[in-house]
Structure formats: C-alpha cells, structure tokens
Length: 229
Image (cartoon, rainbow, N blue to C red; front, side):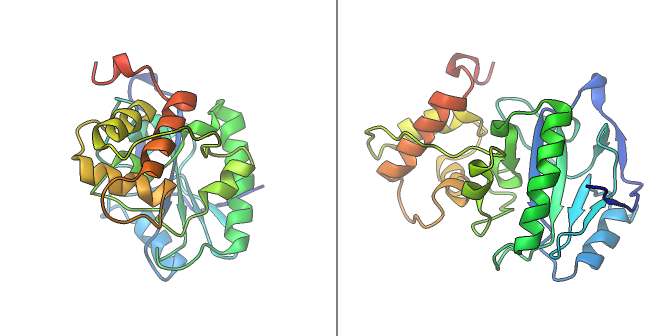
C-alpha cells in the first residue's frame, strides 16, 4: 500500500525518544473526507493524524510514523499518559452514525497490518480513542467492527468468558487492569467500555460486562499491582 501524501504541519518530535507502542483509531465525525483532511492539515487547528482513510478505501498520510501527530489529547492507557508520543493515529471517514464502508475497512486492515509489523506493536495495543479518554471521546463508536479486526489478528476480542457477577467494583478492577484509566468515574468508564465490547447494553453493569473485562485483563492486562504506580 502506498498512501497519498498530504502533509500536515501539525506534528512534532516524540518526547524522550519514545517509539510507538499503540495505535489509536478515530472517526472524523464529518460528512466530507475532504473537509476532514483540510481540518487535519490546517495549522490553526493544531490537530492531525498519521493517516486518514476515505470511504472508498483511499489512504492519505499526513504525518510520518516516527513523528508525534496531534490526534490523541488528554488521557491515559495502562497507567501512562502522553498518548501522542506513544501512538500512531488513524482517522476514518465516518460520521459516527453509519456503518463503516467496506472498502475503508479493507484498507484499514492492510494499513494496520503494516504498522503493527513495522513497530512490533501487538494486537492488544490497537485501541479506540474512547478507550483512554472516557467521557471525552466516543470514537470510533458503536458502529465500528472490532470483532472483524480481531479475527484478522489486528485487535483483541475476549474468547473464553468465565462465570462472573454483576459487580461494579469487580468490573472496575478488571477494566483498569486491561488498561482503562483508573481516574474515570465508574459509570463513565463503563459507558466507554461498552462502546467497544458490549455496545447493546444499557443500564447498570451486567454479568457480561464483568466477564468480558475479566477475560481481557487475564489475557492482555497489566499486572494489577502496578496500576497507578
């Protein structure tokens, strides 16, 4: 894959020699991909991403992968901040209210496969903007097909759920162990988690929420003793 090059001035150096260990997925929340590209390349907006994928699957690169694009903003994942220095950001042309176009998803899989290979990033480190910024961001939203990415080895999805109880404290412990920010309020964190892993759920924490979070923590989480250290 050879992306079209449309450089954005909105980038800098990764801090302290950091190399990417995450990929963050976004949607543009705009009807027009051209408008999104102009926004991401406008120096007055101070926002960018490494890549932008059109609905027809055409890929635009705006920032070199070794540079620090300004796409993430405030938040933490697995107890660490400065997500811009740690990640590669991929924007997808989608309003957030419709399914993601098939050609776009096909290109995303090719692009992601290359990025993960080049930087030795595991599938568990492909995350949503909403994952590390609960309550502030909701993209790529309920319409994004995380299971499809997981089937291709490009994201994670829990496979072996165990018995659980609908207990918020138990859910929080597991979700934070997987990577979610411990400073988020419980209901806010639950809503963010459900955007990705249980998008049809409503109301109080469910048995499935807890079982999924614990499966993720068991297989992909950090040592719970280090959370907040």
